[in-house]
Image (cartoon, rainbow, N blue to C red; front, side, top):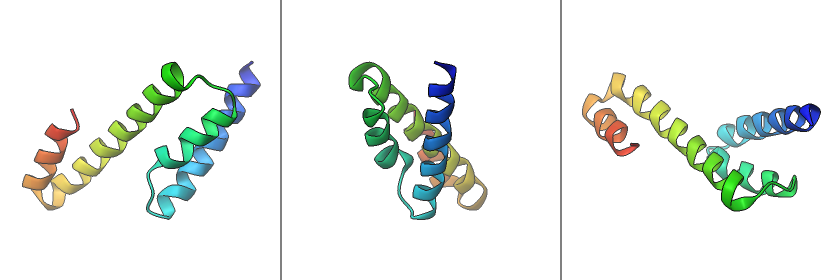
Length: 80
């Protein structure tokens, strides 16, 4: 069971890196991959997808906070 989750983590990490390089969000790639591995859509995939979107939104808000503080603050508040 541990090797299953380790393999899944490595695959999602690689796919998230590649999708980030293409300018896509990780959720567009991770959701179908997690579905192919047989995870439950409602109780496992969707909460993980929302969490990944939240992390991405907070990361972009922190990055924009240093450059454009007003836009960064609004994005940070909107991500909650």
